[in-house]
Image (cartoon, rainbow, N blue to C red; front, side):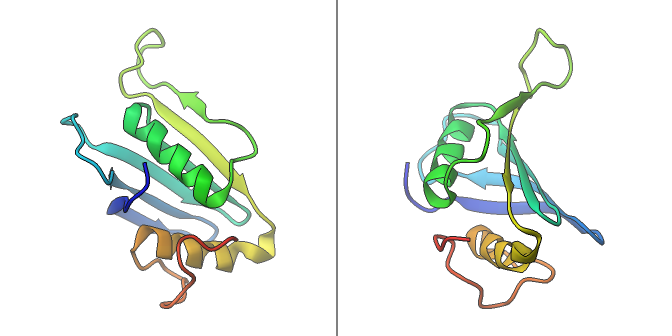
Length: 132
């Protein structure tokens, strides 16, 4: 499912060692669901943690991300909220780890990928498909 995935940042919080982003993702195809595709992202000193909705579109987005950035060290983990027998609201979690000195490059790449300016990112950073 290639194409332009669009991101709406609903909450952004820059802390001393972490950048936290929450929002919605719009796939490059019509989405048959009414509830939005949610994401929660944390960029730490040497890692990027991403949670997305556990549904068809979340699966497609993680597959798209793996093609762009390579697969994460581990496959997606499932984060279940609420009752353990109910997967409503479940999220998939992936993590990417990188060397501490690569954080500025990862931040610039993330800003370009999201199409959204981020605190500390260079205004004309790399294209979203460049390797980190």
